[in-house]
Image (cartoon, rainbow, N blue to C red; front, top):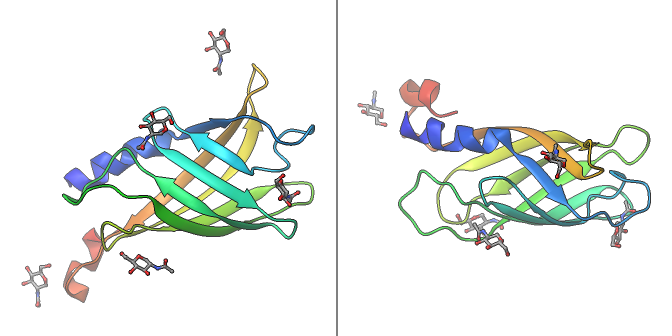
Amino acid sequence: MVQATLFLLVLSLALGAHGHSARKCTNLTGEWKNDLGSNMSITVDEKGIFTGWYKTSVKASPNPIKKSPLWGCQHLKDYYTFGFSVNWTFSDSTTVFTGQCFVDENGTEVLKTMWLLRSYVKNITSDWEAT
Ligand SMILES: *[C@@H]1O[C@H](CO)[C@@H](O)[C@H](O)[C@H]1NC(C)=O
Ligand SMILES: *[C@@H]1O[C@H](CO)[C@@H](O)[C@H](O)[C@H]1NC(C)=O
Ligand SMILES: *[C@@H]1O[C@H](CO)[C@@H](O)[C@H](O)[C@H]1NC(C)=O
Ligand SMILES: *[C@@H]1O[C@H](CO)[C@@H](O)[C@H](O)[C@H]1NC(C)=O
Ligand SMILES: *[C@@H]1O[C@H](CO)[C@@H](O)[C@H](O)[C@H]1NC(C)=O
């Protein structure tokens, strides 16, 4: 399961970005990067609709990495949790992320996320190894 191992690295995703709003973690709009060199650019509109793209630095597919679009939503009142899906444009896989923003000890906004990667398999017998 080389694929699972490669993507597991993204699990330690601690994305850091510059703050847009005075109150941190209330508007995640901006450029984010993780410690593995993946980049994400998002806009969260006034309704909490989450759009942008993700450019991963790790992959399991042999195809060249391309920016891949993402869509999701974020709670905007009190708790600010979010979730989004990435439609990988260089493979037939889909990833979903869910997470929350925190302010770390240095005042940096950090996104703590978990994700699931779904790969395409040919039939239901192989379903167990797809996610
Ligand atoms: C976040 O900031 C962006 C850019 O300044 C703005 O367009 C957007 O409406 C803001 N979203 C929220 C939820 O305040
Ligand atoms: C992410 O952005 C940084 C700085 O702009 C760049 O050096 C890096 O190559 C980018 N990563 C990917 C996977 O494109
Ligand atoms: C999702 O990615 C595929 C390529 O893998 C592309 O053909 C399709 O248009 C994308 N869907 C959206 C909604 O961007
Ligand atoms: C906070 O900053 C200090 C000093 O630059 C650094 O050693 C530490 O790793 C930083 N903490 C985090 C969580 O990035
Ligand atoms: C299901 O697909 C796998 C490859 O993904 C193949 O090895 C297996 O023979 C297939 N099984 C059936 C019942 O078609």
